Structures are given as structure tokens and as C-alpha cells.
Amino acid sequence: MNTAFLLAAGFGTRLRPLTLARPKPLLPVCGIPMLDYALAHVRAHGHEHVLVNAHYLWQQVAVWADQNGVTLQVELPVVLGTGGGLRASLESVGESVVIVNADILSDVDLTALQKSMPNSGAAMALRPDEAAAQIGPVEADATGRVVRITSVVPNDTGIPGTHFTGVHIMSREAIARIPSDGEQCVIRTSYKEMVPAGCVGHIVHKGAWVDVGKPDAYLAANLAVLDGAVPTPIDPWKRGERGPANSWVGAGARIDGDVVHSVIGDGAVVPAAASLTDCVVWDGVTVPAGNHHRAVIYDGGEILQID
Image 1 (cartoon, helix red, strand yellow):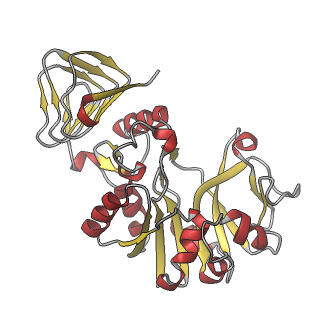
Image 2 (tube, helix red, strand yellow):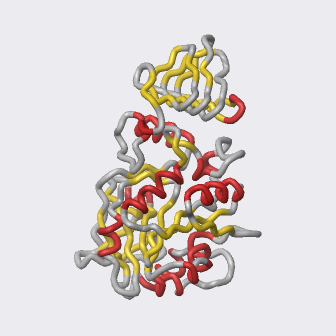
């Protein structure tokens, strides 16, 4: 049995104020929670045994997990970090675990990733990027083994120009290398041991990859999915309708004002006194009067302007 682990315990600090009332992995992209996309991604590659961890506003993640047949791992009183969370799940997982950050939209080939994993080791999905050195270089050599992870595992023999996507797979043995006490970093524990030993394989991912970590990136992700520029494992048009001027409109939404290239959530209201261009409106929100451009209109009609 192979397992998928969805990381959903973080505080979403960089996305505030959007994350003050709901956890980051449940923020909607084209009306669909990011956790739904992550779940569809792993299940498309045959991972039916899925765990999700939770800490911040964990009760909301618990409801989502129950609705979707996912095993919940609540981390209290403190968040355990990626490493600590994985180590805590050791007795609940199969022979290998695919790890996916719930705030990243990607089409990483998880099947190819699994095939690249050495026995009792791990494998990382690396992405080529001209800015990889600034993002944090993670590099493999010509043999296919990861040899460098930023300054944690320095090495100058790797092929430059790639960074870590946050998508990886670890064997049970690799997870067991992580200390079992409290918060732990998976990179500074298990990977720091395995990389010098040649135990970490990789694939190069040249497809879609969007880190939905900041408000401007959140708006951009919504508009990219709206335009079909980012392939997703769930077709948002099966959960919403095409509205005016290339907009996505959720069930029960009412549009009386002007809407251009925007996402309008389920049950939202755009009154005649409001106009929207390149905006995201969350479920059940009534848009305040006025002309809105590049804004997220979220809980209670609050407006987050994206410059």
C-alpha cells in the first residue's frame, strides 16, 4: 500500500488577511478549494490511501477530510513541521509516501516520481528555473541522484538551474530517519543524511507549477486557471458556469453589475452598483458598490486590493 500525504497544517501567514478565518489549503481557486485539487492529483496516480495533517484552524480541515474520505492527522498543541508530521504518521502509511503541499498547483508526474525512488530512499521533483539560484538551488548529477540541497547539503557537482517543487516521495525507511520528538525539518534531518549517501533520486518537472503563497500569486492562480493556462486535475467548468466576458460563476450567484474576467463564488451577489475586472469573489459574498479591479473580495465583503 502506497500513501499520499497532503500538507495542510501551516498558518498561511504570507496570505493574510485571507487566511485569518480559514486555513490556506481551503482557499478557493476558481471556486474549488486547493485541497480538492491536491487530492484529485494524488488519486489520479492511484493513491487512494490519503492523509492530511492539520493544525491552524484544524476543525475546518477535519470537516473537509470527513467529506472526502481522507485520514486526518491533527497536530496539537504545536505544529510539527513537514518532518515531524511525516514521522508522526509512520505507523499509518504504506511502503512509500508521496508528499504534496496543498498550496501548490502542479501536474507533476507522481508515477514517474515513484519509479525514480531508490530502494529505501526518496525522490524529489525538481523544476528548471532561471531564478533557481535565488529560489534555492536543489540539484541532481548526471547519474540521476540529488547531490545538493541549497546550503544544507552543499555540492558543486550537480547540474545547475533547478529548485525543489515541494513534491517528493519517501520510503518508510527514509521517514524513520526523522527524529520522533516534536517539530522537525525533513530537509535538515532525513534528506541531510540521505543525499550524501546517494539515496535520493529525482525527476525534472517542466510542466505546470504555481506556488499560491502570497496574495498576488493567489489572484494570479485564479486567473490562470480561469484562462486554462494551468492544467488542473479538476475541471472548474464542471463546478461552475461561463459568465460574462470570460468569467467563472458558481451555483446560485447573482450578477446585476458588470463583470469582466473574474471568478464569482457560489451564492455571491454582484449588485448593479458594482463592477469587477480581474477579481475573485468568494462564496456567499455581496460585492460592495464601486469599480473593482484586481481585487479579492472575501469574507463579509472585505476587499483585498492587489497592486
